[in-house]
Amino acid sequence: MNTPTFRDWQSVQNEVLRRIHAREWKPGDLIPNETDLALEFGCARTTVNRALRALADNGLLDRKRKAGTRVASQPVAKATLDIAVIRTEVEERGQKYGYQLIGRVEAVPPVAIGASMRIEAGDQLLHIRALHLADDAPYALEDRWINTNVVRDALAEDFHGISANEWLLKTTPYTHGEIAFLAKAATIDEGAVLGCPPQSALLVIDRLTWDNAQSVTKVRLVFSPGHQLRTIL
Image (cartoon, rainbow, N blue to C red; front, side):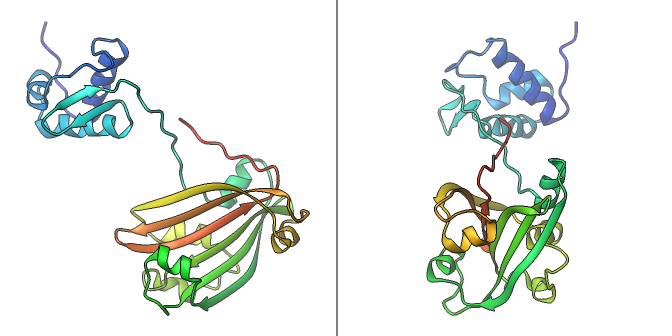
């Protein structure tokens, strides 16, 4: 019986996963090196490298230079988070989506925001405030700063007919981002916009996206009381 060959990194990844799940390679075990696996699988070493890197990124393998690759002793479960188009998110809940632009202005951001976005002192950004609705009720308050040194086309968009959230996801690439989740008490202003009493418990998502070394946008989404965030592991 001939040994099967593996022509792409996904098939190599699947075979490595099979061996881990079957306990052929147990937690903590040192697995064969890339050269030996490439010879066994009948593929290029680069193919094996990509498969092992993907599994390491998912927390299933521990890779250390000069020490080899081991099956993780305590695999880490990672959540997958996508930047959602809020309109789609609302519609997938079976609700009618609505949108209201509250404000659009070019302004110098607060010092903390400018520092986190790594812009020059005194640079103006585009500041957008908007309300997303579900079945005509407040869903999320969007407070966003757009780096127009990077996203120049945003200056020509009035954001009355489309939210900055949706427009950016359709038109502007990004390479990576930072995200934080927090709970906070509603301010008087937030309560007035979201239709809830001040001091109501609110879920907040703070997100900053980058195109390589340049910031693209920083947004704070404040959701109405009772909002639930769901993701997959």
